[in-house]
Length: 137
Image (tube, rainbow, N blue to C red; front, side, top):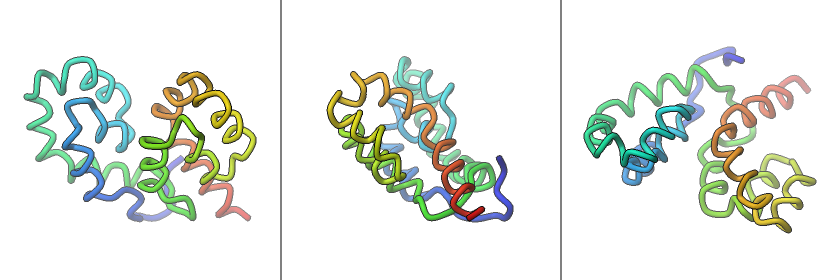
């Protein structure tokens, strides 16, 4: 679902901070580029060459994410911080208002890390859907 206007859904500062760990694909996952994020993870940022090139590509990735995802009450950067550091406890799910799955993650270690991995690939789309639904109310 495309946003109705050009808003700033993702932070370029957050993109650059994640780029520090970008040889593991963190910034690419944040900007919704799961396939290349996975490649970066398994190849150490394409043997560090792609990681260095990404230093110059972050502004365009940020702009693409701003056009692709829907702005709203759920902040993408905050949700990604929660997923990254507290994801196995379900904090990002509580933040999005998904209480049941938040509790499930809390008591099962992010549903045995498989749920956390699923959220790594789908968090941007989940937030877009929640923001669109809340905007429709």
